[in-house]
Structures are given as structure tokens and as C-alpha cells.
Figure 1 (cartoon, rainbow, N blue to C red):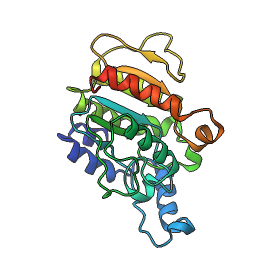
Figure 2: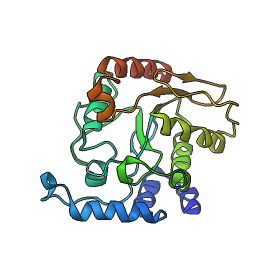
Figure 3: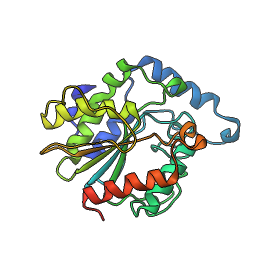
Figure 4: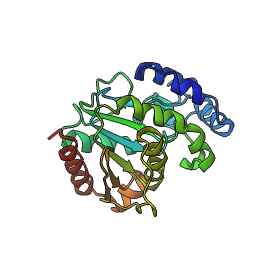
Length: 237
């Protein structure tokens, strides 16, 4: 799998390779079980039921790094953060920031475009209880590393949605940029920022999960502040 990731010469090739991955038995079983049983409200739809590739601009200056696809979101639609409430919050915020051409994301063919921005996840399969294991994160890492490598010429800012994505960035940075992570590693927090010469600036943002948005831990204004900062740092303002 790691060799296949390294041999992906383009994002299109990488996306196809990601979609055919069977490296993590627990995740394969879960994603296929969800796709077969379905949620009642989606019973007439055909689920994707495979790993979910990244989405957005190939010349992205800004990347948004998430945790993993949702069982009835990306695992259903085949596009990251598409078709679930987390995606509703995320893409509405990106639209307000001028980083998406529309505020909604419901299917792979809905016309959504993210100029200058790309969205991907640390783990590409939907995990049980939305909790991938550290081993699954590490197994999946070559896909993330290669995707960042392919957008490296233009990438200036990475927004990490949650502590899991924040932690996944450090080995990615070391592998792609050859820069050793700081010791101790900076703690995750909403609005946290870390930068160093020759690598993208890293911004922390609470994850757009229902748990955070329904309780008010993450508000639209807080999201807007993060994306305004990211847009400015990426030179997209």
C-alpha cells in the first residue's frame, strides 16, 4: 500500500488508488457493513462503501485535514464531509469565507468547487464510533503523505480539525518536508498556530462534529475566525 501511494504520480491516480485500499481489516468490515445495512432514511441510495479520497483544488494553498469519513456521510456519498451535518457546517463556513462556490454539499455531482482549497482526512475509511485506532492512522498515513507531497508546491496553510488531525500532521510534515517536529509538540487547541520556515503554517480548529456544534463549543463565529486567518496566511484573501 505504501508503495502504491508513492507511485501515484497525480492526484487523480492517488484518488483511484485510495478508493481501492483494503489495508485495515476492521475498517473494511465496518465500511462494507454500513454500506449494506444503510440508514433507513438512505435505504434507496447506493452507498460508496470504500475509502474516501481527498477533494478540492490540485493547486491548493490551503488544506483542511479532518479525522475520517462519516459512516453515513462520506462513506455513503464517496466525497469527504459530504452528506452529513459536519459537512453542512464546514462547507457553509467555507462559503462564507469565499473558499467554496456554494454552501451545501450533498453528493459527488452537486457542483461544489473549492478554489485554492483541498479537504482530506487522516484516515480514509469510516471507523466504528468515529474512532480509528493509532495503528489504523499509521497504516493509512502513506495516502496522506503522498497527497500533501503532490500539493506541496502551492500549499501554505493546513487547518487541523481536532486533536487527531493535529497529531497526524507532525509525521506528515517530517516525511514530506524533512522537518523534525518540535519537542515537545505544540498542544492542540482552537486557534492554536505553529509555523516554521519552509513548511505550511498549522492552525488548530475544533472539529465540526455535532458534539461540538450542538453544544456551542464551536460556533459559526469561531469557524469564521479560523478560516479568515487561514485565507489570509494562504494568500487567498
